[in-house]
Amino acid sequence: MRHPTRRTLLAALGVSAAAIPLLNAPRASAVRAPGLDDPAKKEIAMKLVSSAENSSLDWKAQYKYIEDIGDGRGYTAGIIGFCSGTGDMLDLVELYADRSPGNVLAKYLPALRAVDGTDSHAGLDPNYPRDWRRAAQDHAFQQAQNDERDRVYFNPAVRQGKADGLRVLGQFAYYDAIVMHGGGSDRLSFGSIRRRALQSARPPAQGGNEVRYLHAFLDARVWAMKQEEAHSDTSRVDTAQRVFLRQGNLDLNPPLDWKVYGDSYHIG
Image (cartoon, rainbow, N blue to C red):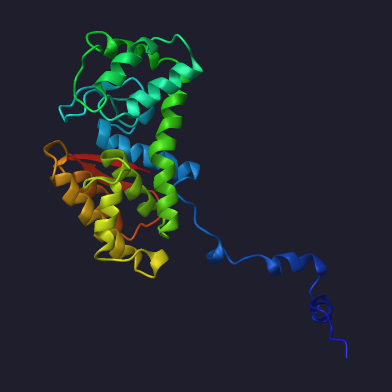
């Protein structure tokens, strides 16, 4: 016996063919929420990091930022805190030189290679900060900063966060940790922070509770921060990320209110 098709049954019930696609549409609750790489969420992430790194929500004003903050990493500069002592500034200036040969920073490449791994300014002073600010007016240098931020920090954080089954807040917690600690495997790096968290909780991808895991990750992050005097103020976790977590705002939906170093910030 030939069974009637679903379309035939719906027609018998008076449901038009035009309505069938709507009946096949996924329920709103089944639609996947955006990740941190969603443009609107990424903009929030940039503002959150800028509040901690530069005491400002205007992250695009930080292309020209440069100073030595005394953390043993030499010059810290740009939208994500590229450092002359940690290699990421060297990678950035090399990329800029590849794209714009003869630019104002290209002449500092030998010095940047020499000071990598140290806090030295040898070959950079006195004019490197001035020339960095000049370069920051060039759209090509701004784009190079964006691209290196994404390649080294943002994209790896989002990939690992999604692999761990984390929503936007968890992906941001990973991103902020990689920005400060780097993505390597030494005892204070993101990789070690994550491993420390995994000792006490499992992420959703491993069958764990997301909130419990994120508390464990933030606990491990705070421990790592306190190992370095320059990072011992943990307010970017305590009065920002932990606040959103306690509110259950796992997708970082505005409005957002937080504090860093005692200063209050708001995204409406």
